[in-house]
Image 1: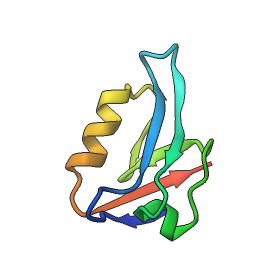
Image 2: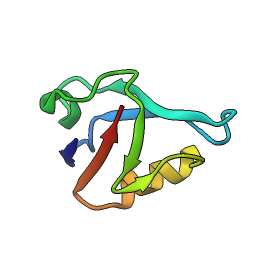
Image 3: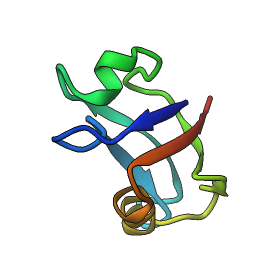
Image 4: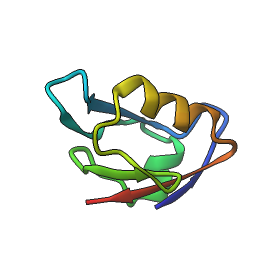
Length: 80
């Protein structure tokens, strides 16, 4: 899934990470009218396997947020 950053970001939030008992990263919320909502492919509960071609296994939550926020105007997600 490839999303363009909108005026309010990518329009989704995530949960999980290494510091949460190695919980996989997954989509927690999708903002109504945001980029992820308009695209329509992300669903709450989807597991995030890669962010911008970086595997999320053993990634902590803050690392994932940094990659998403600092990766430019497009984020590429591999989902399960």
